[in-house]
Image 1 (cartoon, rainbow, N blue to C red):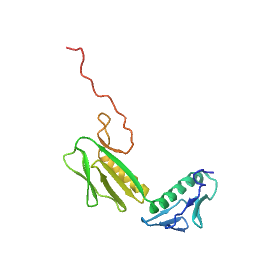
Image 2: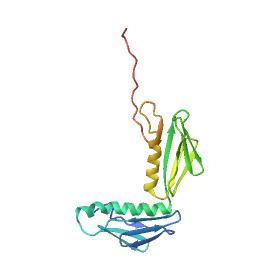
Image 3: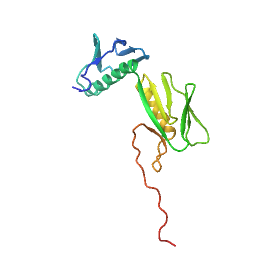
Image 4: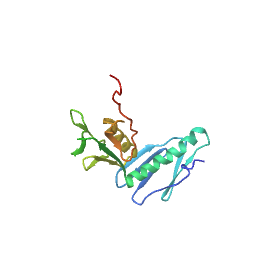
Length: 182
């Protein structure tokens, strides 16, 4: 039995869950999400808890058990509390700002890089170098943060670039000058 899959999901007070076969619809104060779960699992609701169970004990059912439970739990948490991903910009003259809904990055290119947020995603900037990507869909928040990081990933010599908050960047030693040769 999957340790993750057998844990029940508690539904907060302001969240409404509708299950129609393998289709799960979750509505909350932050938004609304729907997902089609695998046909190898069954989702049932008893009061304010959801439980995810396998249809049988095949390999695919065992694989999908914990995954399906985590996806549904992320939907419930997202529409009730939301998710955030923080990014740090390091480098002389590198900065970010929000113009309207868009994120504008000055990160050493000859032009500014403008990133349009997908539906349900908001950008915030603190101190011109800390970007906060927030929204109610965990997958979308993570993908958007990865796209921002991919604009200028941290380089290994000086560490300049965009990194996740708390990310450790492995540094390399630079070249050394010629020594002793004439």
